[in-house]
Image (cartoon, rainbow, N blue to C red; front, side):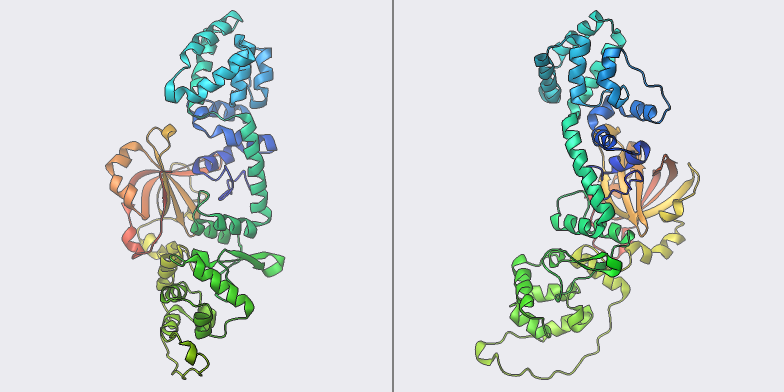
Length: 465
């Protein structure tokens, strides 16, 4: 699961950069995860440590060591310095540092970007290495790598601790996916992905997701017995935008005393104000009490607050109304407006005919295409990132009904089409398909803003974080 980057929601290896590295590194044992956590960082990237490590791991480059003494320091990372502790060991073994001086080097590395202080170490390291038979070229390369650590070099101890959490998170996602997704949504906004993206991923993994229902939903998402001995995930009332927790908790408490018999019983016993009633109706949480959203809105409009003197009087009979069901498009649109997600069809599946007319392929249709092929793709924009280490490249993540699409937008195009890049919620990308080692990108040549096709659909992206 990890090697194919099926890691949405997994601690430390859920980012775009980590998911691009996983199919190349293909972790096989725990220490591989320790390296995976540490290698996708500004320090190793700027210090040119990533590609040499991958080439050596894949047998494309011979593993060499400057000396037998340094082999003990670098053997666990195939001769490439990836951790702060290795830099400190290097200074002791190859440059004659004391352990106290090596710790001072570590502190200078951490503070170098803010206030400098590495310059004295350059001379000290170079002189020490030359005196012990190492070349000036090796000393210069090591110092450049040390400067890279000043941007963000990971301690091996931290990476091992994180890797343990990564493995535990991966195990839960693999073996208890409903519980894993439920916990992530209840912890939101912690994490990298929105509840919508987590739920879409869960549905692609065939997890049963049950809708909001005042008969069953608590404030938080919860787990229920599902089919074939698997757990199902029940959406929680906390997903409803604008619903106050106090109102939802009161509803939850009175429901546990006895089930609601009808809309009036719900509204009066839970003491729901007009706003909460409307939010529950629009979110589809009253479906099993009264029917679809239009009927629910009609029903709550007929519930009046009763004075205590008249509380026991029988309610007047009402003539049933026959209101039309919302269309599929209206259902999806209202789902996103009220919950930020939908359990109906993915919006892109409703637009697929329009997108085919534009000759856009789905993410699924990219499978098997030749590397370098000209393609057109489209998807909801769920993320835009421009890392400092990416030389001005913006990475855009699109989502369609089958999964995610990774798009690379180079600086020149980003500046030329900035409005489309930043403002699109539904984006078409014309570009070249690039795929190798299980990693697939579309290198953008032109961007198109297709947001008007969404007709007001409220989807949100995670941008530049």
